[in-house]
Amino acid sequence: MPLLDLSNVTMRFGGLVAVNDLNLKIEAGQLYGLIGPNGAGKTTVFNVITGVYTPTSGKVLFDTNDIAGERSGLITRRGIARTFQNIRLFGDMSVLENVKVAFHCRQEATVASAVFRTARHTSEEARVDLESRELLKIFGLKTLADEKARNLPYGSQRRLEIARAMATSPRLLLLDEPAAGMNPQESVQLMDLIRWIRDHFGMAILLVEHNMKVGWDFVEWPWKKTSPDFTGTRPMMARSVVDFPAPFAPIKVTISPGRSRSDTPFSASIAP
Ligand SMILES: Nc1ncnc2c1ncn2[C@@H]1O[C@H](COP(=O)(O)OP(=O)(O)OP(=O)(O)O)[C@@H](O)[C@H]1O
Ligand SMILES: [Mg+2]
Image 1 (tube, helix red, strand yellow):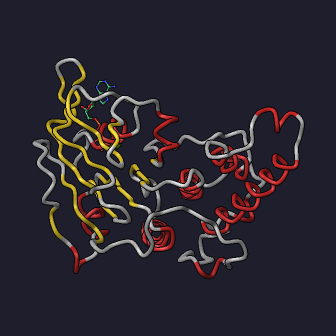
Image 2 (spheres, protein in one colour; image 1 turned 30 degrees about the vertical axis):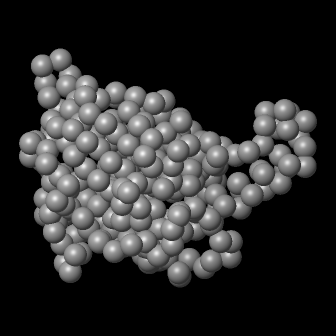
């Protein structure tokens, strides 16, 4: 049973058909690339999966539930997180706060417990703080925790967006051109990091790339193949990037405190 199953999805904007009869299946713990030229409809696919748009026709099943047109917040709680082609961080908030905000979509403490600062609320806050800092460490952002997000270099902002998406404990992570604007060294390191988080946390990842060469290079050779499930008529391809099962399933993101940064593929050269 696929984790995500799009069948015959069409998205029209007036007379323009942005996505035409798309069929796409993604298995738990797998890493996929969605590759196509500008305007192929890649971001629209993300917007349909995350409830920004209700598809004109077709089904969007996540974990066998039809999520087409559901509210984005509910879809996040179901376990789908994304980053945006145009970075959307809270620029005036600190790097740490940007990640903490995302944790709250899963937080169990109630408003009342927050108001009265109950023990449960306090311990929840401590956990969120710890896990947020752990995510920052993984993404090479630890020393920038108190910096305003807007002051970060571009590549670091992109990594912060992924860290924030990870904070919602996704089972499916959607990355819209995560390497855009990065220099070649940064993009290679980012791709290594993306593979590492898939291996480490075991979620499925769908990565959008408009540059065919970069997308193709990202495909790991031994498993390179055209996805047999993709039958869209737009010039767009889905490639199964890594075609072996996740190391652990079902997937729950848990951040283990105390892991050293050297465990991540991030080299000190760009990690601050
Ligand atoms: N809200 C909208 N209203 C009207 N047209 C739209 C809307 N969103 C997207 N489109 C159109 O749908 C088509 C697909 O756009 P989309 O942004 O999904 O492409 P893309 O593959 O992500 O391209 P890029 O590589 O440039 O990011 C384009 O022609 C775009 O102009
Ligand atoms: Mg796009």
